[in-house]
Length: 104
Ligand SMILES: [Zn+2]
Image (cartoon, rainbow, N blue to C red; front, side, top):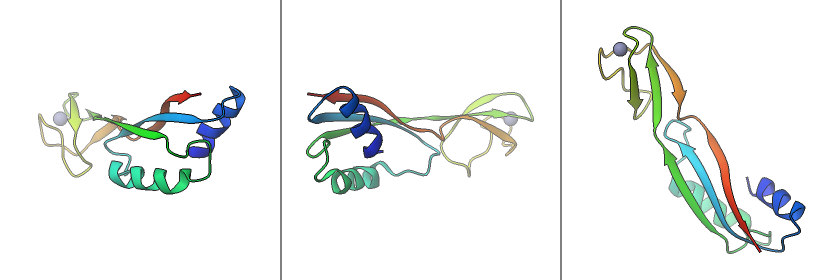
C-alpha cells in the first residue's frame, strides 16, 4: 500500500506525502486499527513517514438471491435482512483502496 503511495508521489515529483486516505470495505477483513498501526510501522523511512492516515469504512452491500432484496451486510455471518437467507451475493464491501494522497 505504501509502495503504491510512494510510486505515485515520485511520479508527481513530490518529496513528502502528508496524508493518505484509504477506503476499507466492511467485509475486507481489514481492521482499521491494525491498518493504522501497520501504516505507522511501514512508513518509517519512506516518503510517507509522518503522514496521517485517514480510513473511510465502506459499508457492505449484498444482493439476496432468494428474495431479490439488497441489504446492508455487517458481516458474512448475517443473512438477508428481509428473509434471513444466506444466499447473498456481495456487491460491495470487500474492497481496500487508496483513494486520496496529499503530497508536497
Ligand atoms: Zn432475502
